[in-house]
Image (tube, rainbow, N blue to C red; front, side, top):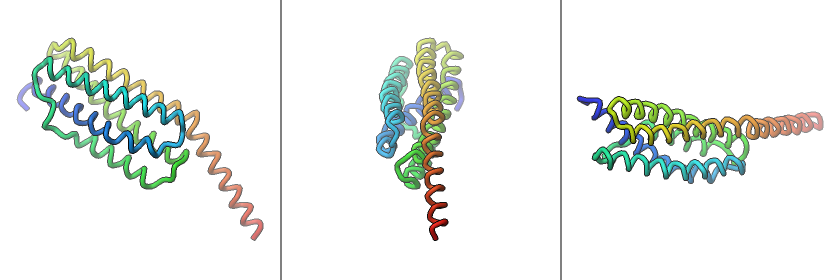
Length: 177
């Protein structure tokens, strides 16, 4: 890399790859979700992700560079971790909690990447691109906050309740034996 311009273009290409990888992974994750509110949040975020891809395309068109030719290794790894989570658990609150953890890791990566890209756009004088990137950054932050609320108010209490029920039935089995 020899200039901020090249760095900016690489950041946008990386984000374009990341978002497209995520679009492919989200339906697999959604199939494993048991909590209705979480499923709705995933569906809403999938639609937002489609819009975010369109924003990145617009940035590439406006600044006149191709978005293809780069694979986001970070997103690849984050999706692999989510796939491991999906293999490890049975549908229910614990798997939902694991998927939220994976989704939040993805959100935090995206928040960081979009923040960097926005700052570079501002530095380079790409006002329109900076505004588009800021819009996506706000959406990613809002999604992270929504996932926090769902996990704290619904998923963790459900998981704890299930654990307590299992412990109670194990104690009864031991007492009967």
